[in-house]
Length: 223
Image (cartoon, rainbow, N blue to C red):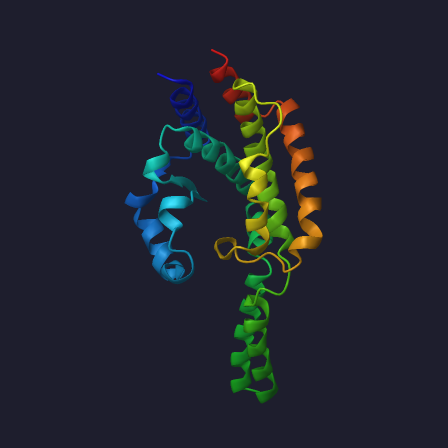
């Protein structure tokens, strides 16, 4: 059994200790429901083959099981799970902002009682349009991507690679502009460098902390 397989199995066991199952995404009816009800068949057709999802349990594409990409993804998603469990309402609101504020537009139905309330319907396109930065979502993802960078750096060291840009750092752009996260803000050039510096600092902290996720990975891979 190679290191990637052992690391995957160890993280699956760690997830189970948290009451979280790791499931094949393609076989989960919940993910198919999310795909269709969330209109991802329009704006994110790679939802199944390219992205894992943490929603009570962790749903990972079958092709990633027991691979390097797979265990790195598990480490990332367990960070999300831990943060969700620690502050479920706050994390949900932060991750869903500002689009959740579009629900205030439903107050426009009060216009049936007093017509000026109809103007509240304008809040729906205003908050859904990708013009307001989702700073909460960026911060939540940076917590998880810090673990991803730490895992990348660990593998680089195993192969004797001293300097190489982490694949997680390369995904910072997606936090800002890609549709599958919903654009977090339109000022990509202005803030990208700041986010990468922030991500590097957080990853360094992950590497020296006693996080049971990172500690488990290191212990398994040193065996």
